[in-house]
Length: 593
Image (tube, rainbow, N blue to C red):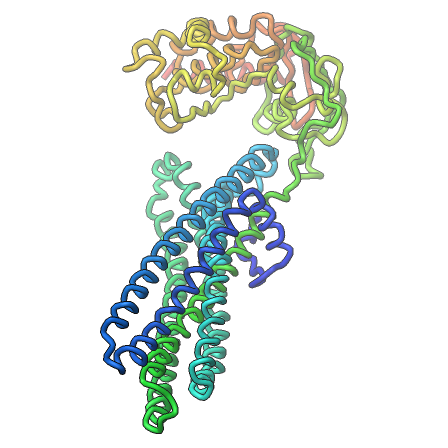
């Protein structure tokens, strides 16, 4: 998707249009009703000039005041009907458009949530946000301002042409002389504005991506004094986006006055030739006035159709990108005959597992080990040894390429994803808190979990102490990403989040690496309660925190170098012993300062 924003797209793609129209099936009646109201409004607009002709030729010329009042009443009634039908058409189409946007956005969001983490490694979040917002809005405009309105414009244009030919064939031919000029102007406009709109879409996606990236990484931006540099880069992206918009403004500023100029020239021709015909008695004054009114109306739908073309072209490009996202295959999903066991025992076995984020560079190579139900295993090693990759494939956020990984003697690829993940709880080093209350972040939307259960879990992991001191305790709103809480407090909430679902398999990814000593004591106590009678896989940074585990596995460059208890590994004086000495010496050096 790196170059996806530069897709040129076709002005009209029948395949894409057919697929777009498939989303309108539940709203067909609304669409037909909107089209009907549009056609009625267009027909009523055609009545105005003809009523003017009747008023002039039949009543004003003959000084029949009563008949003139009759025409005025009809004219007023027509205006009221035009207002009512246009209001109804606008309301119906906008209502339908909002419903359609809701359906498409829900489908995109659902699909995005089903994609593997590998997809998000390749695709910037800002571009995905553009798909859900700007691109869906462009598709909405096609239906609310495009397709339905096109029927009205075409019907109105056809009605005006028929009316012109009916009133005076010779004058109509004089107006039609300017159509080739309009055709050339419109073609040139479409070519130029199409490229400009393509650039706008490209740069707005880059703006979204860059802003999202910088806001997410704001602590790094400020600490490393990147504010001015990032501002300069954003200024360049924003300038390119502005220039693309300026181009469209320029083209529209030329196109619409050009159409008006051609229209004024056509009106001048009508007045000139129509005046001659009136003098020669070949037409009536009322017919000439009506003809001029129809001629003025003639150029409005032509301008509107050009604008609808641009809306259609934008929608085609947006729908192409949206459907490309929706067509992204879900690489990790449950098999048709998925296994579901509740509860599981918690036995885990890695059998010669090899895994790569980008083949052929494997980050795990023929890894084999097992955990019995209720057993705790710690994974240690240098950065890049493959520790985090182990837990990524255990929860099937990624799929391994070789070997097999079994839970309760069943390959995880045969498990139902929901059933498998419902038996697991993960506590990461970087705790993510959602907007909502503290209680919401513990239950994670599961309303079956009562407040009593939430409080019990918080007490078990020592989180209740600080939660009860918050302004509204468990109902205290958590700001974005939990900035109001300390790292240790967020970690304790994540422990409560894990405990409240009563998992059989517990995964801890360096859960104590970023907290102070006092908080670590609370966390260690919480860990003992959390790990009790659960199969636990722990990625550890501080070796002093894993002395109590049943087994320690030492990883090095994607392979298992050593395994055993803490004391056994120290006695072997291998890699684990080196890691322990390095960390111990580092701590000694820190305390001696």
